[in-house]
Image (cartoon, rainbow, N blue to C red):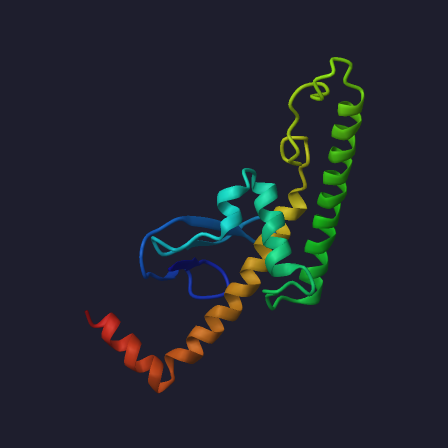
Length: 172
C-alpha cells in the first residue's frame, strides 16, 4: 500500500508495500491531496466486476459502506455522510426517472418486439447523469478515512507489536 500525502502530513511522504492499482484523491479545493496505490493481487469486491460504469460502482460503494445502517458502515463525519447521501439520493431519483422512461418507451413499442426505441442503457452515466459533487464528496470521505488510518498506524508504530514488525521490514 502506497499513500503519498502532500498536505496534512509530511510533504511527499509515502508508505510503500507494493505496486498495484492507484487512484488520486482531490480535496475540497480541487487540488491533489494524495495518490493511493493498493497492493497487487488485492481481491476486488464483486460489484467492481459486475458494474460497468463509475457512477454505478460508486453507488454500490455508497450502499455497502456509507449509507446509514449498512452492514459495513464506515466511520465518517455526519456532515460528510449527509453530503454523500444527498448526492446518491439524486442518483437514485435519476435512476428511477430513467427506468420510468425506459418502461414508457417499451409500452409505446408498435413493432410488437418489446424493445421500445431500441436498446437503452439503464445506467445514469450513459443517460447523462453527471454530478461532480458526487465525486468530490467521495474523495473527501476517502481522505477522512485515510486520516483515521494514518493516525492509527502512527499509534501502532509505537507499540511493542508495531516495533517488532516495522523495524525488521525497514532494515531489509
